[in-house]
Length: 251
Image (cartoon, rainbow, N blue to C red; front, side, top):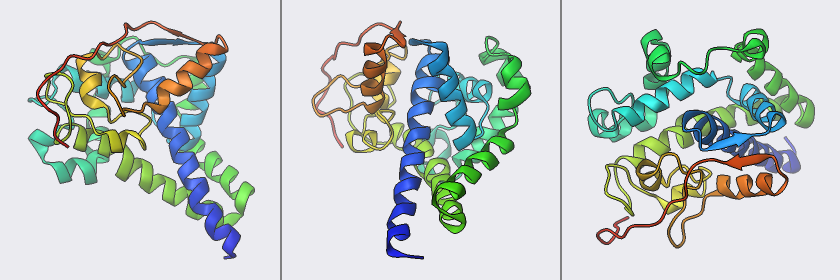
């Protein structure tokens, strides 16, 4: 592998992972799970396509599991609480806890009755493995067979075993607080999770489209939302959040 490809592969993997994280945060989380946003149909379809190609996950399953997490935060019924299951189990095998809950029919009917599969879901987006195969094929076509395969593997590891579980593992274990709840903020992790690791803020005001409220808190997804708003492609529905002082935060 040439030096240029050796640099290209990790950069592409990081870019694809960040694209998936942003799509998850804006579309699955803030728009569908909490109805904090209303996206233009073209933007909604774009995010669905990105997630189909990069994660293959079902939007109804993701939303149902997340809403259940809010309904039972850090108590019996929470699908992935490190306070109940331990930090390392959630960080390392969160994918198991997620799929166990996502395949529970009662969870889907109870927490996502508004997201029955539509026509495009039934015809295309429900075929997650097909989406992943096409996405991997696009990577291979762009940077070569081995480069694409390695970049796809790195993206899989980063998204499934690092960033996605990090949000819950750290977010309900240690960090800073602006509000009194069982979640925590990590300003450092928020830089890599499109603002999702500002978890204490989010649990205090789940319908807010903006997760950052304090100094040095950066929410990349909110930056993208503002850009889309300037183009008339998104409406912010959720209320703004005002910071409420609590005891001095501890990182």
